[in-house]
Image 1 (cartoon, rainbow, N blue to C red):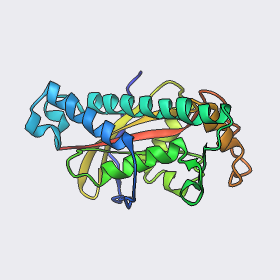
Image 2 (image 1 turned 90 degrees about the horizontal axis):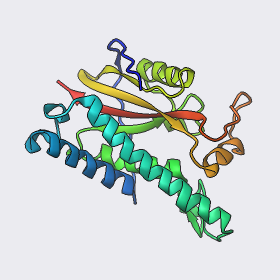
Image 3 (image 1 turned 90 degrees about the vertical axis):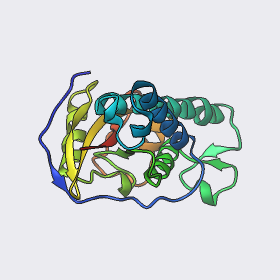
Length: 218
């Protein structure tokens, strides 16, 4: 992956309101992040300053690898398999109000991000963003995020790295292509009733958005 640097950009601080329930993603990502920094640097500094023993980029790359592995397994071996088996249990956007329903992969991912966001010991945050969000929460929230999404879409296979200042605090930010890894992902988007007229027709491995990891830096 090539490294793409960009200048600092100031923007309004953003906070998402964390909600509820289950998320193996949150627990796993936090745990692995802690293990990684513990193995590479000072344990006491790991939770708040991962850069003490490992570069922010390395930290973000490792966290992202775990997130995407978990998400791919859930989308492929749980959601898609249930559909292939004609199971009465299905992944549904409105799963909380339905019976025999489980969250969509993107919803699982977002719930994990919300739990990490409310954990002061995590030392980082992550989120989904897209140029074509079906959910308003996934829209770019800053000039940096907008530029990053355009870059990873125009340069398939590359990540976007840089620094951003939010609310007077500095962050290292990594944005990774979020690809359609399972049929359940792109069919859900392609058939969604909230698609705009110019919404892309997604297929396997298409970049549907970006996964953003934000790490505080001095």
